[in-house]
Length: 157
Image 1 (cartoon, one colour):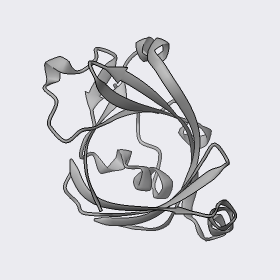
Image 2 (tube, rainbow, N blue to C red):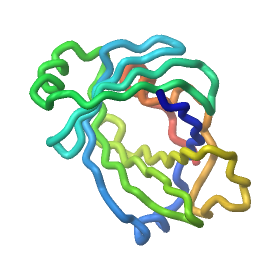
Image 3 (cartoon, helix red, strand yellow):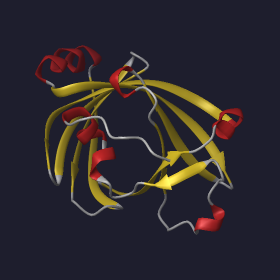
């Protein structure tokens, strides 16, 4: 089990784009999602898949269990998805030694760009890059499970 400690932000400018180290095309869907717990399948670049279980309702910290699963089985499980399938491209961007995952959403969520920072310690605000916008940590409407199950949040950086 991994203790996931994360902060999420809307992205305010494209200045991060010249620092991209890697891109991953992601298709993910939920098999179950309720407040405090979710079961997700994620297919990366169409070649690998993971099953993830998350537990907890604290904004910055949740318990996470993740397992590799056969790609063919992940593709079959999509038939059991609840809500919409999320399509996004994840970009890895480093700033001051920290890895940010910048997700650019497609489909019905096009226009939404969210940066996530997972660290064992709290990063002081003055260490954050200036291309980040409003912090949305704890705003459940921006959780991927909410994006899959609910409406499309009004995007305001």
